[in-house]
Amino acid sequence: MQATGDSRKLLEEMNERSREVFRRVVEGYLQSGQPVGSRNLTRALSEKVSAATVRNVMQDLEYLGLLDSPHVSAGRVPTNLGLRLFVDSLLEVAPLDVQDRQKLDQTLGSNSRDIGSLLESIGGALSGVTQGASLVLSPKHEAAIRHIDFVSLGDDRALVVLVFTDGHVENRLFTPPRGLPPSAMREAANYLNSLAEGLSVAQLLARFREEIARNRREIDQIAATLIEQGLAVWDRDSAASDARLIVRGRANLLDDAAAAEDIERIRQLFDDLERKRDITEFLELTEQGEGVRIFIGAENRLFSLMGSTLVVSPYMNAERKVIGAVGVIGPTRLNYGRIVPIVDYTAQLVGRMLSDRRTEEL
Image (cartoon, rainbow, N blue to C red):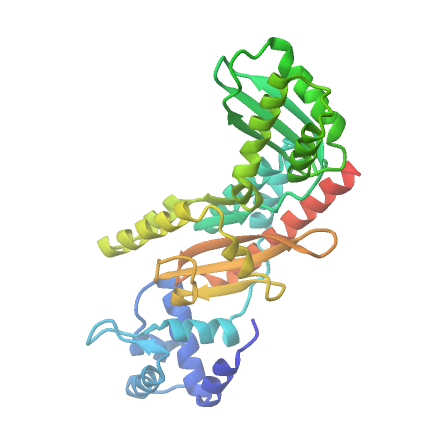
């Protein structure tokens, strides 16, 4: 990760000993989740110094706002500012573990043609590998319609199914008009398929309304009402269908909670995720540049879980356009060196999968 201006300024105020003490404290905390004391540090430092000297250095780092002492006689833990400095300047990213790569790659073995189902599988694999909560923002569906169909589920329920040229399949439940004859659904689907070539859902709905307004009625009134009600499901729900957030592994955060206040903060996070299904801000976080970005604590403006970290990366289509994002939420004491390459690889995997499927459809 590249150091910011603030990080570089803090590093310039630290000598080699201070940097090593700081790095050892952060690494020890990330590994154990516990405060790191001066006696343990004296055995790990490359320079042989006394515990008193190490304590003095830790106090200086605390004065800089990089370390904190949870209790009077306890060791030190990094602050959010300290974690930011570590991530920007001192983090050593490990190579992607072979087993982690294999678990992620296995999601591509699915026979499903539904992009949504594949992304859900990838989200589940990402959560399992990282033991955090995974987030996958599915791409906006700007592809044209390949086929449309209506399926009766009873007198008062029907399903409209859309297959897109990029392989994505979506369906919506709606209430069909009363007195619908058995042939009306087939007639409506055939009529729409004759209009749909090269059009998106919004364009198809506009084209249909235009045809009706011009009295070019090649379909009866009941079938026309069926089409209007079926396609209007997408029109009313366009925002939700344009950007859908897939969340997996919530239970992993609960397993990591150590106290009642932690559980309450995680409950707030779940509420945030439920309220923000159409979470375009999540994608906006990634659009300022390529690669993995890390948001620690209050830097994460999406969620109210203050003790959390969001590691997120965009994924791109074949034209190198950002179309979605993947990420992991976990405690601030994440193993950043391991999580960063996992998120980075998953984003590349999703982008490659979508590009390959698009190529197959052309």
